[in-house]
Length: 179
Image (cartoon, rainbow, N blue to C red; front, side):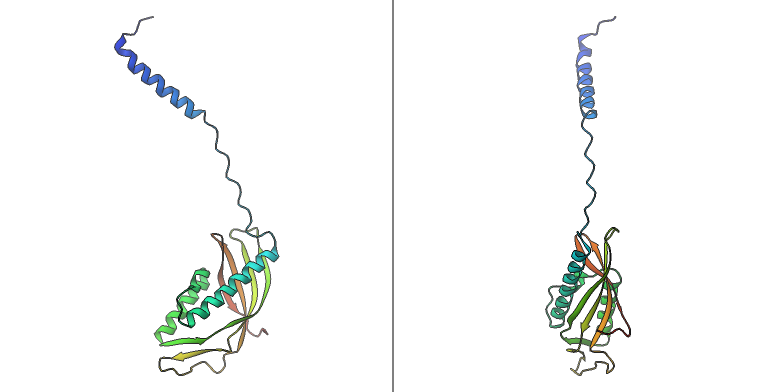
């Protein structure tokens, strides 16, 4: 077997160290699998309570916006078609130089269904909104609220769980439903 000249030893030492490092890294433990996400809600009742809390926060934020406060922004509680509808309504009111005055209130909240095993989790509810104390007002301060607007409205509201928050994703008026 031929002998290596001493000039060849440093490169061999470097190769040995490099191979040893690769061997050590190659033997490192396999990372633990990520735990599967835990459901946001332990029960349907908990999901309904969270949805009601979200909707009450939305009503309160909307009333604050009507009274001229910029915080909290009710749009932070909206997503999907509910957010699009809010933006469209704000744009329409602005185009027509109209604004809302007064406060709406939540008369009732009834959870109707949940999809807690879906991703995202979905909660649905029927709500009754009292709008009797709100008015649509023009730029001159005239009340232009439609005469046929009901004082209360029943809505079917859908919520989705996104980024550890329950957001309102859709809201549909239930025609003919009593409040």
